[in-house]
Length: 416
Ligand code: UD1
Image (cartoon, rainbow, N blue to C red):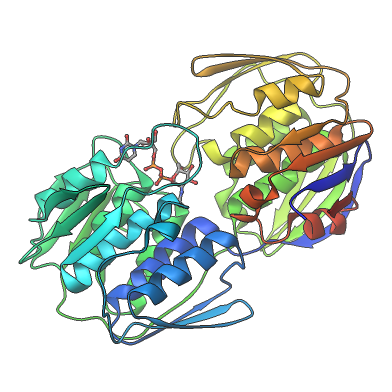
């Protein structure tokens, strides 16, 4: 049951609902550690990374209950500050537990985090920022011990608007002594969701949604509550599926205000998009047009997490397109699989040159990471014949049920 079988070459037509956001749910779950009581998180996606994060919370002493898409965390009693390697090395977001555990207990012992193989992914910015707040680091074989007697608010500027480093600073600053001002903070919607959750529990955060955050340390948080916003990357994935296959789809439960850079690219390839409240209607009647140049960027720019799905669409565009991947240095891993399916793509450094072909051909391909894996599923939908995408486990890290969602949109797809 670790592969996805797709009968491709058909137009999409149908409606599906978009799940809660992985990248919002994970830091919010980490943040429950700062609450010495109950946190209720609704619309939490049922994905492998959330399951790993729940195991990590349990490993330090939290009681966690899950009822469908509601997760209730009781972090009244934290008994342990050493995290089990097994779950830490599976996903990069485990690094969020550093800021949260330090905020709560002033100590954590953690392995270097894992995650998708999309580049070096160092954590230097996280460590430098936390060091400014009075945190000390010591290496223990393969692990890192971080501790502090006092965590002090400070004035910081990130050299790059890293999502994870911004989240870690917020988590460490909420219960710190004094004020923290963070310049060049990331502005991704998932950071807004984290701040809103923390505010619900009594944190004092100003400048939310801007690149300057002002956090006034408080002594204690109380119960926290949030509804995880819908996943803009999952919504974008399904829109690119429709762009590649053609058709007519409706996506519900979408944060339609978070996708402007994606609408822009989809419009350039020839899609017609309408949205109102939480619903997107998309029509694609023709072969995709090429896009002369697109560059991934921090929010509100075009998201790196949708670069591979977009590349798959451009592989069948009527002309040549160029993508610059400006966030991660190793995010063209699907090129060889797309080429095996008949695409003409050359990756040189941070650039991919895509000469669109009339069609792709079904093949047995293997996912190596989350978003690239989803892009291979899209390639299978677009291709003539049968495609088998192996290593489904990578896709399950972020998509609750990609097969059912795409079936709802009319695809012929199944898990085997
Ligand atoms: C988060 C998202 C991921 C998304 C990415 C960029 C989660 C769980 N993951 O990842 O889906 O693709 O934002 O939008 O929210 N960097 C350093 N040093 C550091 C930290 C980062 O050099 O200490 C570099 C990274 O290697 C990368 C770039 O900065 O090249 C962006 O990373 P960052 O914004 O931190 O992404 P993540 O938080 O890992």
